[in-house]
Image 1 (tube, helix red, strand yellow):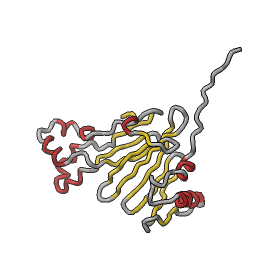
Image 2 (cartoon, helix red, strand yellow; image 1 turned 30 degrees about the vertical axis):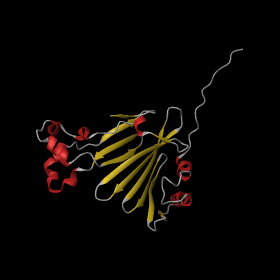
Image 3 (cartoon, helix red, strand yellow; image 1 turned 45 degrees about the horizontal axis):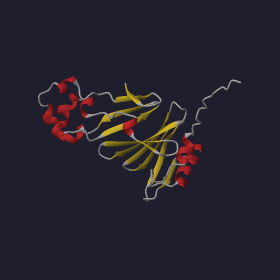
Image 4 (cartoon, one colour; image 1 turned 90 degrees about the vertical axis):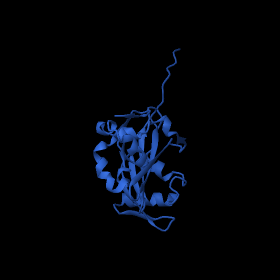
Length: 201
């Protein structure tokens, strides 16, 4: 008798289930009840706003099949996006962005069980020189400039199947910013998801 071996695909959880089941520690200002209220409001075509634990207002501004956005406060935003893995499950990507004077994002990754996944296993993050033009790399004063503006702030925009990075520290130089603007590539740095890792385009 011949035994046929079949590979069973993992059933992926949907965004709604994962969002409502998110540990409170990931969005400490909002409870599970708040997250469920967001979805109810969105389903009803109402503005999805709730009062958070800090006494302020949080608003869900986007909810799609694989991506959502919550403006958590006047100076904060959280994006949650799902990337399909080769085994059929989803990788959860959380982008927390401080939206004060300049956008500054932090990435974190999780399995569907909300176990952390090390970012270094998934993506080689941009370094300062990745944002620079040939003009900047050939300039004799580049080393002096690096002392003034190291890679401190990056904004991350999640897309369907990709992440885009932008350098946001330049304007921190004040009046000197325009002098160096041509040193930076205008287009964001994009990483496409291949089912296992993010690859630089």
